[in-house]
Image (cartoon, rainbow, N blue to C red; front, side):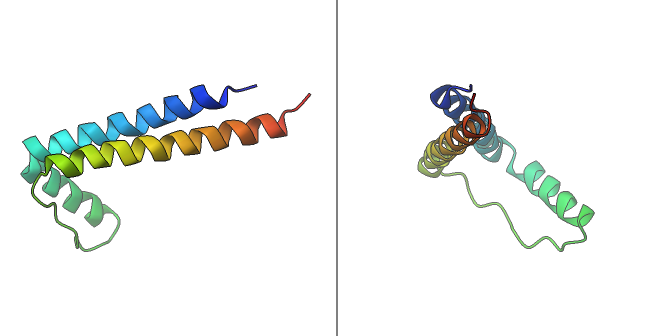
Length: 88
């Protein structure tokens, strides 16, 4: 059995850390990130249509909070479904 709360916290924390690193990178090296995004789009045969906006601290905090909550919910649902499928 997977503990739903622990799984939710682990996935939520993972999502939050990834997005905190992204927000920090946008604040520090936006030009390099834009070049990276353009390159990734080109690899997928997609014209680069998105551009990074200026760093905003409030948006960065909201990004980390929302992704933590989303990750928690997804982790909780995953653990619930796993436990449902593996009942003894």
